[in-house]
Image (cartoon, rainbow, N blue to C red; front, side, top):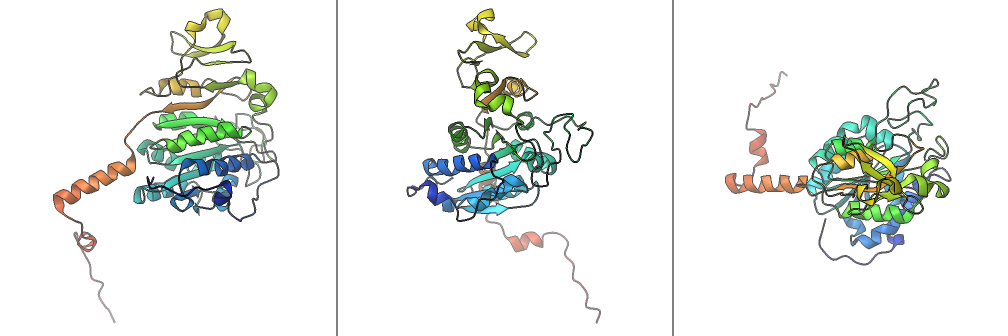
Length: 343
């Protein structure tokens, strides 16, 4: 991203003139508002910003941002964004995707963008359903999910998006949700400021085809008991009075306990900056359903070599050793053929 000073902007400067077309009540509205409100505070310019999406309800996003944007093809947003980020490392490149777009046909592209540590801010809207195509089960739908494409219930074990990202060695992994604009903005800011591939899962309600999927966790009356806020360097506690906590057993498994029963010293201290991803992975697996305590916040944030910088270094080294390249010479460096004129 560019270090050049930019003019002050407002939310209006980042909002396009396009009519926002999501279903009334969709969680996507809240995410859009959070991003548009955050952008003026990032010290970047609309003309140096690119939003790239694939296919799905979330992929309308670039139309609503007054920036450069690409509404690409199904699942290929990370691949296209990789090309932009490598060719133009001075730009801020965001990827907007969904659980279907990013983890089904786009799963291969997503994991390679993460393992390469391309400088992208990736927002994955997870509503655990295919919304745009009217309610089929998605790669994150739970076993037993009854949909138009699984009338007897899904038999496919779902992906855990954070586990996928951590398994691909993503250097920044976080989770937020569509009902808390402040939390989204804080999370998106941290993801944007991270140098490398930043992956953020957003619990997003589809009020038409999967309404209330996350209600047992994120509704106001449930948050104290079922939302675990991760803060680097602090004990992992939750509850109205911090009465619940997370411990790690001798087997390495995390467990939810009452702090009064085990003592404060037994509670795990969150360390998002650990070189290995074992703690982050265990936290990502702490809850495997939508009815029990679930962590939110930054799971992992570590420094790794960034892809475009590594490529630029290779090119500079090659140029220093071999001189500037010649495209014409390269194209003719192996066998060439002349097509005979048979007329």
